[in-house]
Amino acid sequence: HAQGGRMQTVQLGSSDLLVSLACLGTMTFGNQNDEKSSFELLDYAVKQGGINFIDTAELYPVPPAAETCGSTEDIIGRWLAKEGPEMRKKVILASKVSGRSGRKYIVANRKDPKQEEADSRLSRDQIFEAIDGSLRRLQTDYLDLYQLHWPDRYTPNFGELGYERAKERSDDVSFEEQVQAMGDLIASGKIRHWGVSNENAFGVTKFVETAKKLGVPPPVSIQNDFSLADRRFHTDGTAEACAPHNVPGGIGLLAYGALSGGTLSGKYLGDQKEAKTARHTLFEDFQPRYHSNRTMTMAAAHVEIAKKWNVTPSQLAYAWAASREYMASVIIGATTLEQLKENVAAFTMEIPSGAIEEVDNLHLEYERPYFDPGLCRLGRKA
Image (cartoon, rainbow, N blue to C red):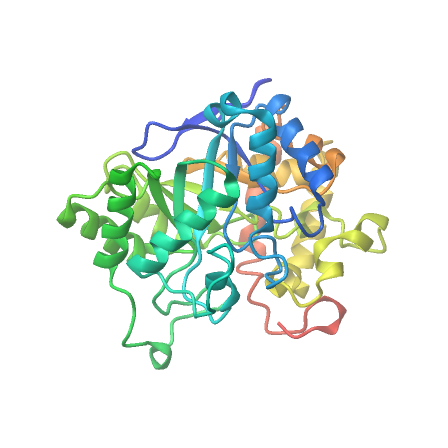
C-alpha cells in the first residue's frame, strides 16, 4: 500500500468491491456529532477525501444507549436521500447486525413502531429483522457489506484477555444458521457480501468451512480491533486464517481502533484542550483498554517518534496500519473536519518508511499494553 498523492483502492477479499484504503467510521454520528456536523464529515470524506467506503451498525452511536440506538443509520440515510441515487451507487455501504447481548432495546428498535424488547442474537429470524431495520433507516434497498458485529458464541472479546471454559454456553446459534441466513440475504439481493467482526482464527475457519459446505459465498472481510498497540490479528493465527493461501481471494482486514480510541494521537497526554471534548473524557468508563497506563506510556513514545519524523502521531499510526499486507481498509474516525482532514492525509502523503519501521518496533517494548494489570488513567480499574 505505497502512498503517493491519491487515495488507493483495495479489492475487498474475494468480492468485486474496490474499497478506499481509508473507510469513514460513523459511530459518533448522533452523539458527539449532530446531524449537521455528520453531514459535513460525510461530504468531505466522499466528495473531497477520496473515500468511497462508509461503515456503520444498527447499534450506533456509541456508547450504546436505548435513546440513541439506530440514529447513526438514520443520519446516513437522510444524507443519502439528500444526495440522491447517484451517490448511493458511488459509495460502498457497510453495516452490522448486533451479536449476542442483553441490550434488549436493539431488538425493539428494528421495527417502526418499536417492537417488544428481547436479547439480541444472531439467529436467522433476528438477522432478517435487523437487515430490514438497517435498510429502512439507511433509506436504501441493499447493503454492499453486512457484518456480524460480534459473535453469538462465548469468546473473549472487547479487552478480555483469554478463553475461559466456565463461560461456554450450550445455546449458541450454530455457524450453519448464521451462514445460511447470510447466503439467503445475498440471494434475495438485500446484501451483496457479508463479513465478520470481532472474530478470531477459530471463528473465521468455522465460518469459511461452513460456507463451503452450504454453498454460500465466504465472508469477504473481518472488522477487528487492530493498532500499533494491539496486534492480536497478526500474531494469534487470525491473519493466517484470512490469508489468500487458505481462503480463495482472502478475507480483508477492516481495522478499527487504529488510534487506540484516539490515545495514539497523543491528545490524552498532559492537559490538552482537545481532550476535554474527546470520547474517553466524556465517557470515562468506555473502552478502558485504550487508555490503560501502559497504552498511555506507549502513546507517549509513539508521539516522540512522530515528532522526529515531522508527521502527526495520528498520521503515523494510520500509515503504519495501512502498510500491513493484509489491510483492506482502515476505519478512520473524526468528530471535527480538522481531524478528518488530518486523518485522510495519512493515506495520501509520503510517510518515510523509516518512521513506520521505527514505530513498528515499539511493540517489542510494549507487548499487549491493553492488558494492563494496574490502574487505568485517572485511577479507573482496567
